[in-house]
Length: 590
Image 1: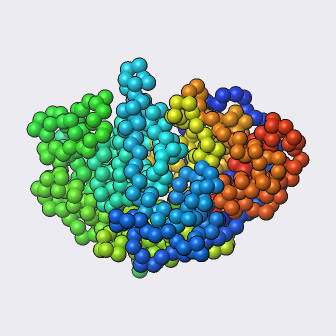
Image 2: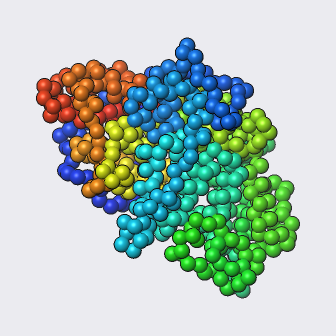
Image 3: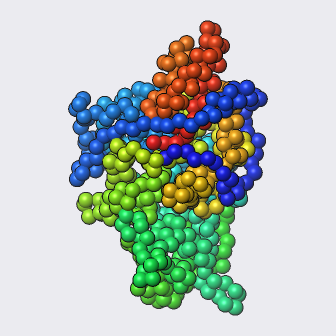
């Protein structure tokens, strides 16, 4: 997808705190880089094939065999897989190793790699606080620890993608650290599990219960003006499962006899689900004591890591209309109503195309073809063993689909790399390390001097951007979607340039022992030869898809800079990295 001209987005983001740069901004290098980007560049293509009917890569006790030398994926396609399925290569050796290992074996290994524990990170780090309490900053650090150093890269990417669908946010801020970190552990646990299990775990997680007001939602009491809260009921339908209109398996809207899309639900169904989900509160509370329902110690960490508990006395007892012709009978327990409600949602035919399309968007391309969505929907509906909702199979289908591995040339394929993923890519590719072994990456959501995006700090349950956002101009006229461009404005582009310029010029991010220090020595060793340096940048950042115009501009810029001394070669590397950060053929994933 060619990068269109930028315009102001309609998504307001909150102001944010100062950023931890060690020194002043690298304005000279930043301006030089901006001048180098006065024109646009493009990318390339490449690919392998998709196995049809093959055994799921993550199943079985033995990994799939490595491919024969003649069947190894190309350099470009191996690099593309790492861009789609990880937070970026740490060296060219990663790309070579993936070629030898093959995609199926690599997936098997990733599916079977244990997840990093976010709550375990809080347990280990809370002693840094004088009151022995975990802080919200520690929850953010845990995210980046997994992204930057965790071996469970695919799980981390899929968990991040799921977290942009089933959103919680501390933007208020009022979520406790263990609430956020336990929620992310839950997403990690379910990333390769079943979507029905994920839906139930999301529904009963106290972080979601608190965020969308299902916690302490109780049955009707007209005398007290009390009614079941409808917030979670509405969002679990609209955002987490089926969407607003009936869908065909290929993601297109079903039309009624009037030619208009058919709604999936109405107010009666929202009220029915709200009643089905009523009667849940903190796990520490005693159902035998109804007066405890609206109470609970929010400073008790286990209240945020344990699924909510049901109070039958606070649950709506009447019949409840759900989707289609389904009505739950009166008098069921809160546990039974919740199980039935989750089943009704999970078995709706919309879930496959609705969730599958968004996972494709997060990993591969903003505008998957109808056929691509339909193939992923088919796997969601049946993984080949009669199981519906198997996310492991879905992830494999997305990443091994022909459109992911051998995309056709054209303007509709690709996506903008999310700002935080670009930042993670830089830190990984440049071997960023701190002396403490941890990081100080906390608040990145400022558009002025940050990235306009930060984990766990979305402005609302609608995430930072909508999967259906269309950038005004050429993209909208072409009928294409560009979700990440909803947070791409003139302000954020300049802010991002400053952010990366500061990162590169100052040689790292953070402060004191937690400062992530970049290791640019391997690039500096190549900087005497502009062509060699550009080739290495092409591998690490562009996935061997650097456009000819970008290559020419970078090479010409470097050749014009003196490179005889160590300091001069370092300046060459810094300038090249800033240009890379803002190059359209790096920003746009192909």
